[in-house]
Length: 101
Image 1 (spheres, rainbow, N blue to C red):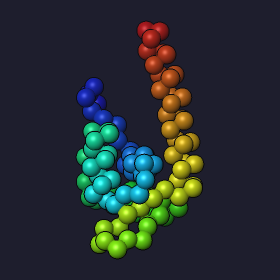
Image 2: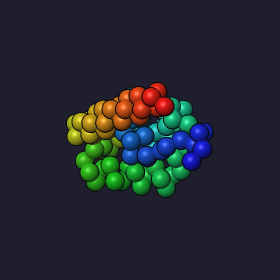
Image 3: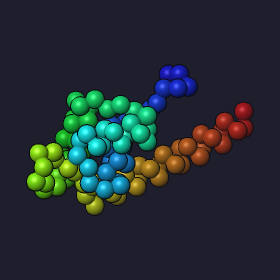
Image 4: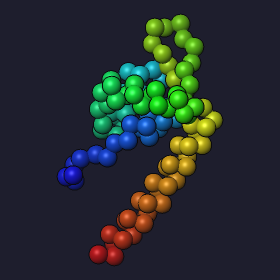
């Protein structure tokens, strides 16, 4: 991996996008590209959405439009907080170890 490559976990990226509010697939893709610089292809995105739905971390929202919006469930919010707090702890430790070099 080079310094310019981005680490991308589609699950975490989709959950982070939905933490802002309800979104349909294309809105999630463009949001993720804006905040993470990662282009999620349709297969990757909808595979992640399916897994997140199966785990009860997101749910579809009724829509009059043909596009299907999704939102975080309470379990999804708790899971995202847990994962982000873990990443924060790892980031702090990694940065402190690098400073010691």
